[in-house]
Each structure stands twice: as structure tokens, then as C-alpha cells.
Image (tube, rainbow, N blue to C red):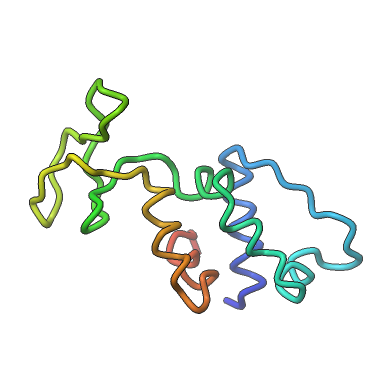
Length: 119
């Protein structure tokens, strides 16, 4: 898949999950314009997009494995399950936060999105 195809599929997935996006004033293919003009950064790194694309499931901060639903305390993210690294779960993150932190350091963050798309 090209970056344009990945971006299009990622935006469509996020929109299916509640993200609101309008393609703006571009003529022709809006996804190609987003890539060409590097505007896609504003979309893929927005919290609203990330919440809709990655979800809000709790993940282990260290290994990224799901750790179950949060316990009743909203101020501390403690999961109810276990993960592969066996760490204590005092510092879990919602999936969108976990993945944004990993994506921001990558040379090509669109390729990171590809692994979360159904092909």
C-alpha cells in the first residue's frame, strides 16, 4: 500500500469510529493533497483522530499489551489483567496515547498506521 492509500484507509477507519473530518478545499484526490502538502501530520497526530483510530483500551506502558478494563479509580490507570512483561500496572496508558508516543519518533508515521488496518 502507498502512503496515500494507508492515509485514506486510516482516516476512513477513524471516521467509522466517530472522528469527524472534512477534506477541505483541495481539487482532486484530497488524500494525495494531504501527503503532498504534509498536512496529514495535523490529522494523524491529533488527539481526536488517535482516539478514534487506536481506541481507548488500557495498554501496559512498557510492552503495549492490553491490560484489561480500568479499575474504578479514574485518577490512576490500573488495569485488571496481565501482560507479557509482568509489570505492575500503575502507569498504564490508553491505546491512543501509547501509539501516538511511538508514532511521533518515526521517520514515516503513516507506515506505523498500516499495521492497524484491515487489508
